[in-house]
Length: 328
Image (cartoon, rainbow, N blue to C red):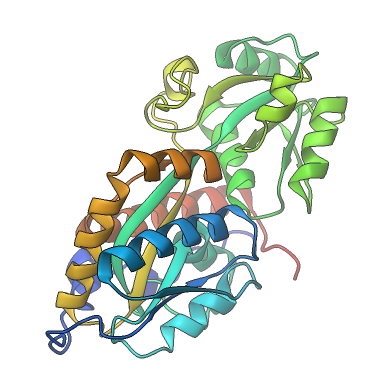
């Protein structure tokens, strides 16, 4: 897998991606039956919670029941394949992530779905950055100090992730590359275990979005957040970009896509409803509480651009670092 680059078929121009929504005309009474959101993760997780927040509000906005169906497995590929093969009629949606559409193409040689050609983007629902956290015993108190420490002691800092090829792993590899440091990657199957070992000092740092409990307990410190700008919910925490690594950004986004061939009118109806929903203060609060991120609601065109940009970005990180697909 080392050195694998994304197949050319995954780097299509925006015009092709947008053409996917321009199929046959939508029925004037859309939607006239329940809509299904397929979630690629198990019940109870961040993606599931987000799907259910959206489903409840979207159902109210459309005047139809919106059902969440969980289809976890194979690094979100099972759900993606299922939706890619579903009718393009506006009644089946996928709660996709950056892993589904922008990371998997570079990790796996043969996907059973095409992240660009098989889906019509609707909107990014939420974006969740990581917190760069270090064990309380690490002497660095800023990102700049951490970089200096890592440069002075190459390959002595262990950075924990939620597994090979996961977004937290790739965030660490991007940090290594952009900061010019060498850390040791330690993958975990469970983030709870990773956090326990961060608190105990087995690993010295991590990029995680669920580290606040151990930070509040005094076992770790947050040095920065990986979003492009400071989070509204944590305005005192500087970004990694402003703290020593200009241009650094690494976030997990969650977005709704429909199967290719979905009528443009249906996509626009869904987008308009979601834009109104995601602007509501109570929804923003629910999203921050559930996934530690912020509501987005960009346009289908902007979402398509993001998918392409992140495919290129993470493909380069995977190639340079020789990241291998996680074992199934």
